[in-house]
Image (cartoon, rainbow, N blue to C red; front, side, top):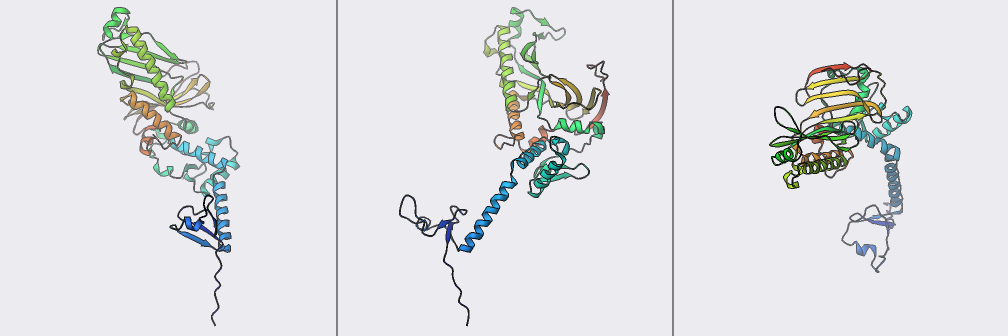
Length: 385
């Protein structure tokens, strides 16, 4: 005789269409009517579970929730986010970026990050580097080594520390066409006129601590120079707003100095940004006692400098590149905002990966000539060209 198969009575049910994670009693009723759960979900895909199936499913859900919790504990989440932010700067993360962590805890975090599929090795060796999963492929690495840039081994760590900092800009040069304020300024304020081209050089105008503007007025155009090397503008939304605020003050200064109507000066958003120095600053104390400067003549853009610098809060190092965008203030302000959003990991109004690879890193594409300059302490402002 064949054995009789005992069919167990369903113990719980769940709707796979509406909420496949929640279990319900067979005779469960609505809170606002006498309809049962089955009546309400009559058109849905219903799964019936026996007591054993329900217990197994509950255990699996609890295990999955615990794994998800451990996957994103505070320490690991902070570490993975920090690695991703370094990757967004165009660099791989390394042990020296997390000097505040013990060697054991650093190894634990990198191991757990790799086990959870959050981190990958970017390079192996005695000092391996790491990347957030996905960034090891998306980042376009330039085929330029530290040695080809003239940077010796003693400067590698310092250069890396500088490259992963927030990008900023200083020494911003702008111009806009304007032929309506040259003559009024000559009439009302006899200024200093440059020999040769007849341009008018206005007095230096302060915009804030360590921030000044100089304005040169030609007969058909105006040039504006924002000097802020000691307090550069962060290349994000706050820096964008600061730039707009500074230019509005320059525009008001021009209007007042020329005794003209404000309509004579074009709107600041139409002014053209000719060039600026795109920089990254490291404020870590230097282990190198002698002031230094490296210059790379870069064929495609101009030059790249890596040098020691004295900041208002102490000594540090700066990596900067001369860039000539020739874009309107409106375009530059938008690019600054989108760059900041990308670095912060925001999805809305952010750079694409391709744009980020082009804007954020400071790498030479074709090295033409390298100059390595050490400056004695007695001549800190002397730079040999």
